[in-house]
Image 1: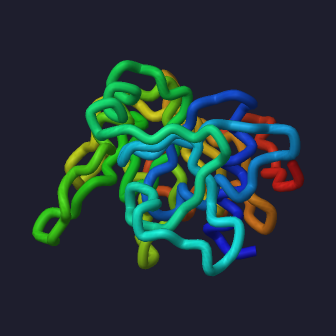
Image 2 (image 1 turned 180 degrees about the vertical axis):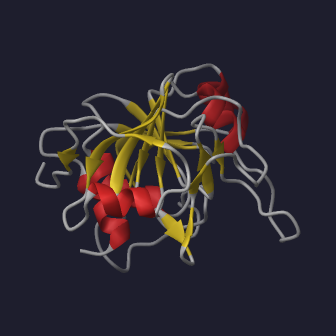
Length: 218
């Protein structure tokens, strides 16, 4: 199993039946493929749809039906389409149960940086700032390191997406929960040890006595 699939499968276990869920561009969109049996959620995309699903099979892509990143997608029967004003009304009004976003860095305060790298061309901030500020629960789905460098660090060196603390970080190595006491290591992925996670993390981690092994069977 590759790293992105592992992360998406573990994040999917956090979703509950009937929730309204936004999936960010890139890795987070994979989460829709791995919902546990019996769990049905409403996937929202900030470009204006509720009821988004992955394409069921090749050859059915339509230019007019994409997610916020421009990737072809499909919709469930009864899906709703609307303009960006309504879409961001859902987000800013606090109606999203969960948003799943990628990350460039997360710091010891649980603050996320994910929208730009200074000096590099970016199309714009997109909806990330609104999503982190407006969703009831924020899950960061990202690889633990980038080019061998930790992405979970003492203080974000990139521009923050929001001052709000995220609720959960899921990587290919671990599940980490930001709390008032700091970043708590909740789970370690199969094939890794607590020592491995500590070595790949620049931020201080709180390690309880009962760190679990990540389950991907749900």
